[in-house]
Length: 304
Image (cartoon, rainbow, N blue to C red; front, side, top):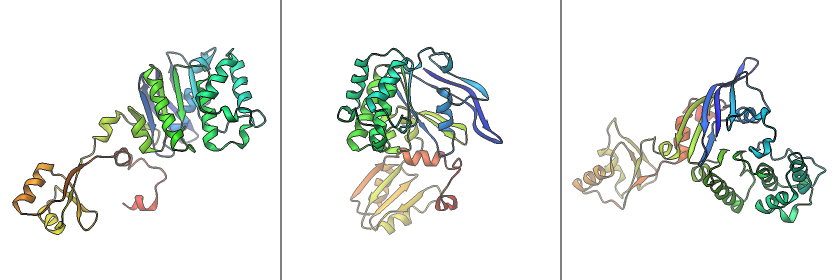
């Protein structure tokens, strides 16, 4: 288990993390989201002792990271895929890390095979693609077979096969009872991977919520496809209803139930080719939730 307890971190006058508390539980994948500048990287660095909080504490399995005698056996972290010695091969990089914790060469071989780097194990990672570097970073995080896995943007640079592998692998680790903490800006991938979400905005906790609750938090829309969209829009001209025409035959309606629209179109003899509920995406729910917590917004969104 990973516990963040009332943690604050300031850099001069800027507060990067503000009295932050949440718990990452074992047995599920917890996603870590937030706009750029929200404090995610600072929080992850504090978890593994790279940055000291000004107040509060971080506990991993009930212990501070700096008190662990063999931290690789307790928490595996990937924060920077390019943080490797440029003159050591991938194998040597892992072997050096293993030697610091008394981990045998067999385990080094195992994690190399696990992440699919066997063919380049003796190449220097300075020439690796970002995707290959990500795989090496994941191998390093898994080296000590830890109970807590923390990965920052692990699918950056990966091809579709690699992205699917990371997703399935992380879910398998969680199913073993491990604590899995994952940061990513790829909403579509997070939606398929995470069970729980921790969302930051301007250093503060915005939400600690299940994925199912998150995507169900916004009002669902109904897609209506009809050859008479203008008539339908006129009938739905109500202050409590939001109507959006997406093309010449498709109307999105928010504020009505499916059966209400079906009855209305039947009563007014409006032909309907499609009547379906639109599933709210994680991206839509996330953008709605963090709308006022974006530090670096585009001009278009700022004007909205």
